[in-house]
Image (tube, rainbow, N blue to C red; front, side, top):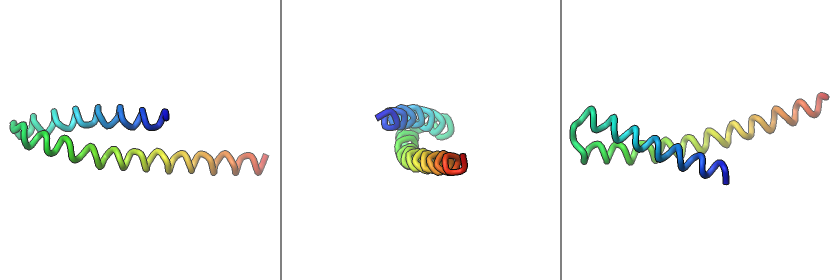
Length: 69
């Protein structure tokens, strides 16, 4: 549950930043919303995958240390 909350808060923060940057560059709210909503969705999915990969790496590292100890 912690990972889901972390991912959601990251997503909301990322959308806010992406919309702000897109608006600063385009001065067009429609373009800013389109860019700012689409990009963070994919970035959030990538973040979730990234977190899972690092969790697996951590578990493997812990298991390898336990086996050699």
